[in-house]
Image 1: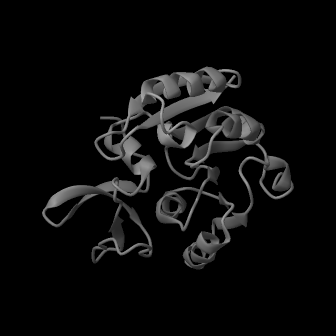
Image 2: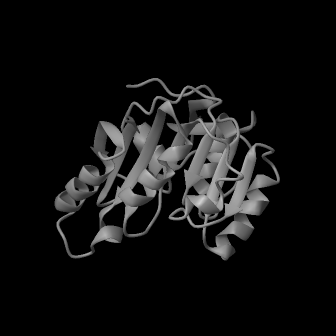
Length: 211
């Protein structure tokens, strides 16, 4: 099993060991008396990547660009163990929730922006980030990653979750994944891929670094 980043631990909740981070609760998850809250991999693709033992390259305190932050379920856990965390979400309703999550996390910066248009937030997001986490439900997921590659330092990491049904609801997921990976290779070297079906049907976890 790959080592977890500093700030992510396995702790007992409801009689079993679960991923956890230290911070304020966000989505009704259990929290122990020491302030550690359970990280539900069934509601978090990055959590599922950790559960599968993928080598994310994260050690803790990274600068992060999170694409597809929604209402903050996963990005709240990321902000618990990372450094400055920029959270991009294009839908106004979840961003209102995200603003509430950020109130308890001084390092979390919500951005009401479209991840397909990084030029709209390039003046806000710092360059040479350590990591991009991508979880967007749209066609063109590889295009999104490639366009945002500009923010990553040369030895940074892309942690992407490819949603087959968001690309093509009728195609075989394996074919979709291969097409997306082919496009990703224009800008990234693929280091590891894992199907996340135990937690998320027809999703592929991808670890990559810039070319």
